[in-house]
Length: 286
Image (cartoon, rainbow, N blue to C red; front, side, top):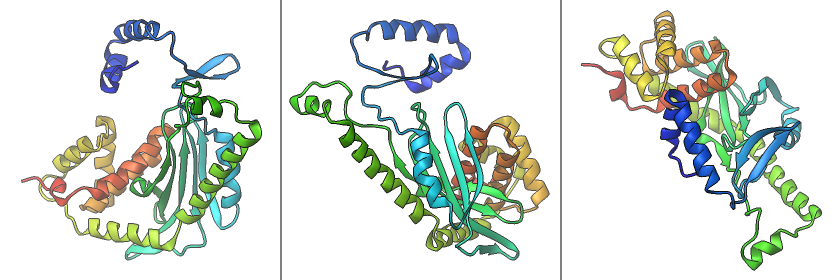
């Protein structure tokens, strides 16, 4: 509908009546456009473009779970209104030490949204043994957007694709899911864990300088942690006693473990890794 996303979110929070009027108006101007509706038992789950490619959660599970049946332990899995998650830890890769007695081990985090809220993502996932904090290494994720051919046809070539047999489409899907399976197999490796541990060690060497409360406030603002979450992050940082960038990241992943909403908890696990990537200047207040 060409409504800017930030404006959409602002209206949704502060002026839903205004948003409703605008959405209805612009939708009425696009009656000739082709859309995909995803339905379940009479309810519309998603209103999507004609280029949306369904990558269903069921098919993802069928591709991923056999790969995780040997050498992995499922840490958690969840189906929310918007996302599907699988998080697992590998027992084939030996844990590595960040500090004395502080071991981390590697696994995998798989996330998908079959209603258009996110791309399919396969990312390394690490777990800290002393507290079972989880951290998703989003910067190393492999992603597949839900974009395919148009579902209507305008050119002759596009028209031909409309008449592909079910057998051909199934073969294309099978090839895609085999790639996802191979990606899962290649994600939880020792070399990846070593890179993550090295980043954690570097963060340990970045001290929190100045007022810790102000440092936490600035970091939380930068990585979009809410005010309520910020209070708990500060509490976890004090209890942990590690006034470093690594300590702040762990305080955020501790908050993730205490967050009831699975989507938000998973987001905080990614934010923990974001914090480890911040330059040292973000942890110093003069």
